[in-house]
Image: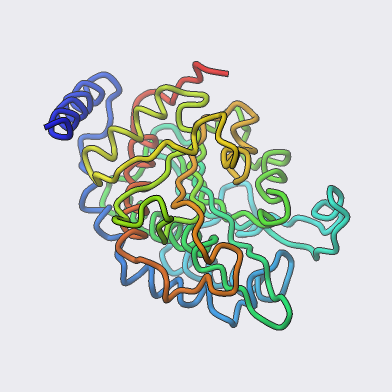
Length: 336
């Protein structure tokens, strides 16, 4: 009964919110359903294959993975951003190694872009890191969940938005799909972008960050129909409400806020790429499945991914992005 009451209240709020914020009348369900387990699986078996050598930052394997991502964007007619000369944002080794004295090679963020129809200068970023930890003791650490899952989610979300655009329902705001590098070594790629943004940070309305959404943790052993939501309400009540309402209407995941607690000892809010946007005052949310036994181990393989969960969480990220890209007002920063 409580769940039914919650859904009624949430759906009523959607109706009121739609009237107040002018969200596009077009329902995203058709485009959400173009995000499929089959496509995610096809991409992930390539991105998280031994051929990519664990996608260590600056490695040949990571560059090969990046080339695959670019080919998919080209195939789906999703261009690189205006103001850029290609799909790469180069990051020199000197920058990557300055903070911790490591010996990483030159690397790149990868970006793709769909221009908004009404507010093209307002930018929604959807991010995921495509690096992992490489090869250790001759063993390839493929990082299927971390963060192959988020990486392929971005491909599917971009394709869904591009299909909508071709049918005359493109986003009102522009969307930057940002695959960042160097996350495993200190959030370097997102930090570099935040310090060298292609678009002014003042014009960036939100970052949706997707990092590990293909598995379940021990706390949810009985069901994978959940996702951890971290950071949505830290800066903006609007962003938190948008996530809640989009989920209630379209995906019905159990939204778990355990790790959003500022007192949580894991401090996940500071440990993924959204944080480099949040600390610059940009409302940001991090979608996450929690840590499992294969985290940062060679056993984080594609055959352990739960593709039904990966699909539903990717769809949730998409409908959240749809609301953010199409509502009249950008999320208000009402917290510090």
